[in-house]
Length: 250
Image (cartoon, rainbow, N blue to C red; front, side, top):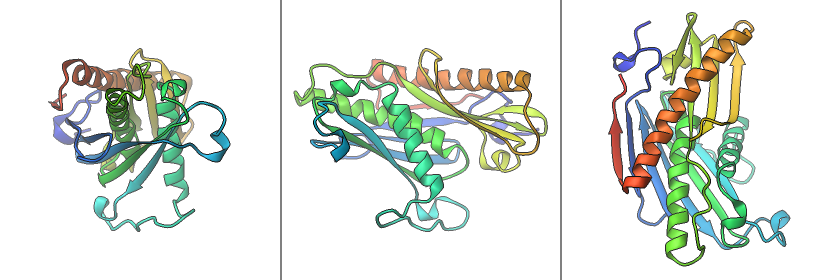
């Protein structure tokens, strides 16, 4: 099938990342994958939830939101305690779990909470995976800020982390689905991977017919390869101190 930006089945959408996008956040990142744009901001605070008190350990959590004009029709703003939808709550928990898999909670400098806000400015498929990829860079930079302030002796980050979607559309396995593909996919999966290619989480659904083991393996392999391209970009930005980068994959 013909894909956006002249992509092949195993191509990512054009990528653009800007680190330190916001003035006041401890760490921030604007990530664009095709027409999907997510602003991620990480903030550190000297407190933890009551259930965490006395542990001596920190915590990493996330919040996710679709801004009202980010979708084809206006999304209702989620405000007030207890108001996030089931989908939003699920994505927030996914982002938090993913970040905690690569951050040493004992190295945050005591009972400290990092909150990473992921706001979707424009949605065209893959918002949760773009949010995870951007959230990692925001979190990394927040921890670097914490270290520069003398709050921690070393960065408590084990690995880089990224996520990508993969799907089965008209019988063809495709990487990094945009909305037009995701909306008609027979199967869609979101895969979170660290920079060593180890799987953090897989979310997948066969929407039309069950998926066999062989095709599942094919999709998983493609997703891991795609996510590793993203962790490679993250590593380049970190190692070379880059604030901005663009990649064209097709």
